[in-house]
Structure formats: C-alpha cells, structure tokens
Amino acid sequence: MTNARTFKLGPLPWLAATALFMQMLDSSVLNTALPAIANSFGENPLQLHIIIVSYLLAVAIFLPASGWACDKFGIRNSFLFAITMFTFGSLLCALSTSVLTLSVSRIIQGIGGAFLVPVGRLAVLKSTPREHFADVLSFMVLPALIGPLVGPTVGGFLVEYLSWHWIFLINIPVGAVCFIATLYLMQNTTSENPAKFDFKGFLLVDIAILSLYAVSFSQNIIGNFSNAWFIAIAIFFIVLYYFYAKHKHHAVFNLAMFKIRSFAVGICGNLFVRLVGGALPFIAPLFFQTALGFSPSKSGMMMLPMGITAMFAKTFAAPLISNMGYRKFLMSNTIFLSLLIILAGFIKFTTPLWLIITIYSFIGMANSLQFTAINTLSLIDVPDKYMSGANNLLSVILQVAISLGIALAAFLLAQTGSISFVAKQKNILLAVFNMTYIAMGIISLAGLLLFLFIPKDAGTKIKSI
Image (cartoon, rainbow, N blue to C red; front, side, top):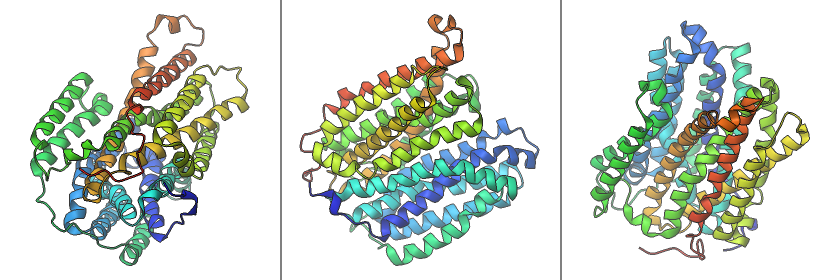
C-alpha cells in the first residue's frame, strides 16, 4: 500500500458525506420528536414505532436496486433521484396530518435513503485510488458518528422552540444545495452493458431482508410470532437465492464476488461486527439511565466521549491499517474492543465517573477503528466490474446488522435477567446490564475465528475472477 497520509480529500467526498449527514440527522432527531408528534396527532407515543419502522423497511426493500440503477441510469442520475426523493419525502412528512400520512411520507423518504448512502459511496470510490479507500471510507463514516451526537440536541431545540415539523423542513435547503452541487461535482458514470433488472433475485433477497428485519420488530408488528420462524424464513430464501443466482451472471448480487476471499470475509465480518457495534449505542444510554440512575441529560453527555474518540480514531485509522495489514489489525483490535466491553460489565455504583468515561471513550475509538477496517476490507480487492454490486450488498448488510444488533441487545438483557445468579443480586438491574456487557464481549471475541481467514495480501492487489 502507498502512504495514506499524502491523500487529500476533494469536494466529492464532502458532498456524499453531507448527504449522509442529512439522512443520519433526520433519523436521530425523530426519536426526540415522537412525543410532540404523538401529541399533535392525539396518539400514544409508544404506538408510533410505525413511523420509524416504515422508513427502515423502505430502505431495506429498495437498497438491492441501487446498484443496478447506477449501472443503468448512471451514478449522478441515481444520486439526484435519491436526493429528490428524500427531500420531497421530508416535505410530505412536514405536511402530514396523521400517523398514516406521515408513515407513507416516511416510505417515500426511505426510497431516497436507500439510494443515498450506497450511491454516494460508490461515486466517491469510483473517483478514488484503491490505496486511499481507507481514507475516504473513514471520512464518510464521520456523518454516521456526528449525526446521532447532535441529533437529539437539534431535535429537542426545534421541537421546544419551533415545532416538530421543522425536523423535516431543515432537510429541504440541505437537499437543494446537495442537488445543485451534484450537478457540478459528480460524473454520470454508467456501465457499458447494463444488465436487465433481476426482479426474481430482487424479490428473493427482499423477502429474506424483511424476515430479518421482522426479528427486530416482531413484538410490535405481529405479537407473539416466534423470531425463530423469521430467521428460518430468511435462511430459506437466502438458500433459494443461492441456487437461483449460482450460475446467473446478472443476478442482483453476483455470487462470483464471494470468490474474492477478502470480500467474503469482509461481508461476513460486517454482519458479525455490527451485531455488537450496533447494540452499543442502544444499550449504553439505557445502562446509564436505568441501571446507574443518571439523568437523561447526563446520560446524553456520557455518549459524547464515545463520539469524540470515534471521530479522532478516523485520523489515524488508514495509516494504522496500512502498516499492520488487515488480518493483524482486525484481530488485535477485536481483542482490545472485546476486553473493553467486558470491562464495562464490571462497572458498579461506586466506579469513579472518570473511569466510566475512560472505558467508554476507548470503546468508541476501538469500535470506530473496527468499522473502518472491516468496511475497507470488504471492497479493497473487488474489481471495478463488481464494485457497484459489492458496495450495494455492503449497504444492505449494514442496515440489517445494525437492526439485528439492537435485537441482540434486547435479547441478552431479557435472558440475563432470568439467570438465578442475577436474581440473587441486590441491584438486579445493574447485574442484568453487567452480564449483558460480558456476554457481548464474549460474542465479539468469537470474531477472531473469522478474521483468521483474511488473506495476508488483502489490499495489495486486485483479485481477478
């Protein structure tokens, strides 16, 4: 690899990052505004999960089509479509007068969101030398880290001093600026021989995705239907897709990509890594408030060190990965991160605040490095002809894995609460969270087995298939 320190970002990564920030900010401010929206519509805020679910499902359903759209209609046209749909959906959300109209508007927003991230990342990767993939991917992760940090504060301010409608209206000027900038900064790169859209494969993949998403939301959507059935349905349709696409060169996800070992390990690693990484932002605020008794404002402030160190880690991620190599880096960082998570499982009421902040700061840094390394590994050896599909699949995996990570945290909290050892503790809730953190750390350590399969020469040359 060449020296990553000499790389300078151009305007295109900034454009893609701005669009991603708009999406991440929108997602994080909505949670803060749910009570105000419920009051406006005369609804119970606990019943407004459909507003969030409708967006997530729309993103999951349409993500597999984004790669084909880039090949067929061009990257710039696809990105313009994404910005238009997301911005138009935001306007409709602001004009909504009921839960139903707001949910439908969120679906329109979700269609744009499904294209926004993968198309923006693909545009940047197409214009970036491979030896600098870690730099640009590291930079583009920043909006995903900053959005959830400032989102609750921005959302609270808008709702308190203006109205909930403004959490959607602020997307309109940002979307307009991104639209104009796209016209000038992004090339409309297309595939020379775009394939016919694989509708059958798209349908099989979407059923599998929806089944996996149902694992996270099944209690809200259909009551007591076992999550095991959803997992079984997802596996069944994944197997069906394998046999369907095995000899089909123009499948929505070409299985030939999995002949590249770094890609195969990276995709599987992303699913595994995000199970734990996606659970941490969900479980940490709950731990601070319900187990340690922190106030909501103090709990929010406790999340800041994680975000700050995560952003700081991006400044040295690329050279560190370049010097150590993917296998050595991911294995070392996995041990470091896992031990930190396990250490968080020993936090008590008497633990000094400075030590708690230190533990979570290092967790944020290690988690950020883990995401950067596994994302880059997934794409670093993929030939240009498969880059669109590989990038698209990576986006799907990220969406599904984060949702499953939240489900994993909820599952572990429920299971550890039934252990007799925990039931004997005086502070049962604290013991439940302690055991959950320890279990998550052990699960994270299991990733070492997967990272053993990372090729030693990953990222040094393009694999031909």
